[in-house]
Structure formats: structure tokens, C-alpha cells
Length: 569
Image (cartoon, rainbow, N blue to C red; front, side, top):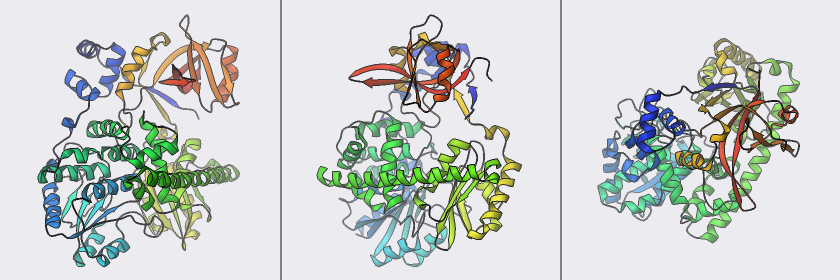
């Protein structure tokens, strides 16, 4: 897919020189830091050496005092408490954190995860009824609740209070709960707005620890769960999130939580070295519990006490993930074939796809896969009871939730945000919806949103690629939104004579730039470039820098992001 290359503006020379001298790094690295908002010695110190001292006072969050007082009251009165969380990674880690931290302090504690297919997202009537039957008087809702004022009212009518810990944008009406912890409330003064649900749960427990005089070390043992949730939820990797992830990965790598240790083992590694290990290995396995069966299995794993118990539970999740991947692969293949064989879908500016038999647990993933190939707003639907239910995903800069709303007369319900949404309709409305949705996309999408952008941090020379440069680069981790792994541009590179194609699919390049030393590069799924590269054509290369380990030997390797031959736009 053709990509538009966008090179980041070069920071002012005097700012680069000042920071370069203050922290003793070369100008290229200083420039990268300034692009990320790191402009002074103190900011660089916090950036490179995150610590618990960087965390904000939890009582700065609106309603935190109310939340602490209500929970303390429940503990004093020995009320029965339910910890309620969503079925995805953020929700299950949140429940594991709060339940795991409180279980020895509250003998009357239970947890609840809604069924993805029978109850759907958020607070469910069934969950509240279950709480009532169990004699629960307080529910702590994690990663959900901010948009459920009707459900909170229903719980109040049954004599059940709610403490909401959420991070989603509030609706027009804030629920009438005992306390609502959500930094995105307009009148909340908490200085960091981008915590995930598990992050909000952690701040609540941090406030309880402070108020009750509980040892903070007990809570810090749960930072591994916060890190996994933060990475998996793809929230900005800046500020407090970056601190929580850095400390949480270090906690996970101690190997003290049997569930995380077992999950890493079935995923094929013993240490978390980068965020991608969480996003592409741990997160999907935790998510697979709720996609294929019930998310209770994920909480059971994360709370497991012995390595034997954890090993069995991790294998179960790994098997679920293998099933999920099979569904993902086969449905994606069917979806792409559907687009290729249908004239309307092939020429459309959007994709709206439906098949009764598709597994509901993976349709959001399939929508994302289709965007990787066609780069246009995509909705994938399947049968759910008497209706068609679907997941929507979008492209950069386009509000898919708003576009779906423009077709609401054809829908039974919908919800979500700019880049992801869910919707339900009668199956007979799908053809009309497909046509209207595509017209809305054509009328409202900006031209810039029809071509994927590749953001390039800076242009460098191949002879600048060395271990000293890399060793500082890797200290800029953990990487994620707003602190992405740096992408570099080298112009006029060419084959050294040793490049080859692996399995007819992947580029394994050996390249030079003028008289530079030879560098190794890998490009997955890029066979179309090989013929011209072997002919000796010069090309411009976008890449990130990584360390490759093979047969015990370590070496630097360029991870190819894109290639354009000289003379191409």
C-alpha cells in the first residue's frame, strides 16, 4: 500500500544544542527528545529514569475522597463488595488488581465479569441482579460505568451503591454513584487525563493505601497488571502512563506473579523486553478468554497462586488464542474475497461486510485486518440473535462513530468513539445501510485520510547507525502512542551484493550508502521490491532500529517500514 511520508519538523538549532550539552548526547538524539516534549535536563531525567515519585497524588482526582470514604465504610461495616469489570484486557486486569489487593482486607469480596455475548459491554442488569442475590451492598465498577446512568439508578433502587472507575469520555449525564473516578470529567482537576481503566483502579487503591496506612509495597506488586493493561489499551505512552509501564514491566520481569510468568512461557519468552511483547503476545491471550469462552478464565489466571495452577490456566488461554487466530485468519480471508468479488464493495470508499456464521468475538479484529489492506472505514457484521451486530474501525482522521450516527434511522443501536464503534441493525437493513454509509464517507472524509501516513522522525546517514546510538535510543522505551519508536530515513542506499529473499516473502537486505559500512535490514512481506534492489537501483529507506539475536550473536538490524526508489514521489 502506498504511504505518504511525513518528516517531522526539525527543532530549533539552539534548543537542540542546549539539550545536547546538558545531557551529553549527540544532536540527533537531542532532537528526538525535543520532538517528544523533553526539553530540559529535569524533563530528560524523568523521561529516562521514571520512578514512583513521578506519580500524581491520587486525591487530586475528582471524587477520590468520596470513593475512599465509601469503601472504608463498607470495610468497617463488613458489607459485601463486588468488583465488576469489563471482559477485555483492561477490564480483567483491573478486576485482578482491585480484587487481588483487597481480598485479604475484605473477607466479603466477590468479582464479576459480564459475558461478552449474553450481556455485552458495560454494566448489565444481570450483573446487578447477581449482586443483589449475593447480598452485595457496594459495586466497584472498573473500565466501565461512566455511560450507564440508568443501570446505576437501577442498582440504587435495589440498595446497591456504585464506585465507578472509568477512563472513557462521559456522556451528557454523569451517573448518580457514590463516587465517579474518571479524569475525563470536565470538572476533574487531575493533571493526567489518559490513564486506562486499570490505571484508574490503581490510583483508587493507591488512595486507599495512603488513607488506611497500608504498606505501599503490597500495591506496587500489582504494577505488572497496570503495565499490561496500559500497553494493550493503546493509550498515550506519556506522563504517568509511561512511568506505570516502565515500573510495571520491571515488576513483571521479577517473575513473582505465577499467571504472568506462565503466560510469558506459553508465548515463548521469559522476559518482557518491549511493549510489543505485551501488545502482540500477552494481551491477545488474555483477550482470547472472553472472545472464545468467558473472561473469568483470564482473572483466574492472573490471580493464580501456584505455578502448577497457572500453567494449566495459561495453556487454556493459549488454546483459546490459537482458536481465535484460526477464526481471525479464515474470516479475514473470506472478507477480502467478498470485497474482491463484489463490484460495489471493490469500488466503494468504505467496507460494510456481513455473514451470519462469522464469530462475533473476532469481527473487530477482522475489520482492522481489512483496513491494513484497503485503508478505508470498515464495518464487519455477523448474526446475533435475530439481528446483525457489528464492529467498526476507522482510519486516521475520520470519525466512524459520527458517520454511523448519520445512518441511525437504519439502526437499532450504536455506540463507541472516533476510531472504533459497535452497532446493531435488522439484517434486511444492511444493503441500505451499506449504500448510505458509503455516501456519508464519500461526502465527509478528507483526502488525507484516504492514504496512510508514515511519520518520520529524522533523516540520518547509515554511518550514524551504531551501538552507542542504539543504546540511548532503547532507553526512550517504553514506546507507544505519542512516544512511538523512532523512524528514520536514509536516502540513496543500495544493495551491497548480498541481499536475498526469504521464503519468497521477506526482504533480507545487506545495504550501503555511498562508502558507508554495510548494514543489515529486514522487511517482512515486501517481495515486490526485491527485483529492482538486486538490479542495483538506489532507493530511500524508512526504518526503525532494533537488535537481532541469532545463534547467540547480537547485531543491529534495520526494521524496514517502507521503501521508495529514487525519482518516486
